[in-house]
Image (spheres, rainbow, N blue to C red):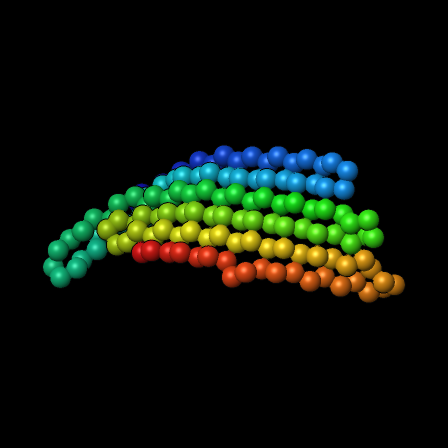
Length: 129
């Protein structure tokens, strides 16, 4: 049985704080492949198609910003993007792109109660098989 697999990944993180603001950005890149286990053949209408190595790859990036307000509340913004691709020969290839943006406002705490409101437009998801 040949079910060997390999994955390579690299990532980073950077951040900064200054006065009432903090910001960070993180990201990852990856790629890999995996052999498909036996029997290793797909029979479609009498033709034999051998299974090939599954190949994967992608990248993601997240950015965050936080601002503390003088009254004790805060504002935050986060953006996220993810791109991935998977090839599974001979059956399909899949690509998926995801993007998201969120804003949040935390009001100053009043006693034991806090109120947080925000906006998160529907993220964009795009996939193809």
